[in-house]
Image (cartoon, rainbow, N blue to C red; front, top):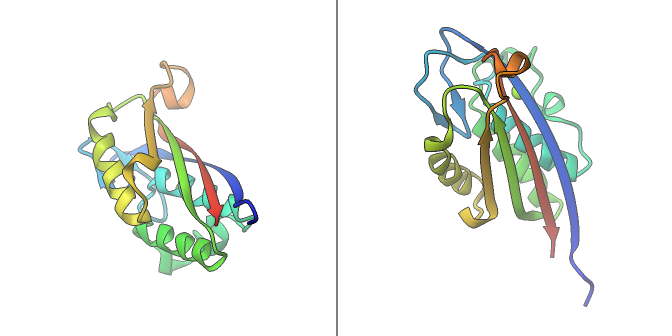
Length: 162
Ligand code: MG
């Protein structure tokens, strides 16, 4: 029997924090006086995750599949992006082995919200929660992220073709 084919992928995304927008991370709305600016719902966690999966499949990034100058994508719910990426993954015979995400945000404190994000991603990806890592860290007050000008996310994934 042939060994499984495995692929790793990495994704990164960053959005600016502004007034008058909802803060949505991992498909979960987080109470905060600022939200992320973007053409879509600006969910940088899901964008980084989607790009990690596309990267593992050696496909173009989410900007190719969901152009930010297309009015159709205005205010887009990023769970739709994730559904599309998962279908591309399945079409190629891969499923998710595990994912690991690091959020970088000075404020708000994201720790209390991570379990909800993890549960939501588990449902969106149809992947057990114990295969989904989400961590949050600050930027120690340094640079734009440390000055609360934005929130960033790194994601890595492992895909398996059994
Ligand atoms: Mg983005």
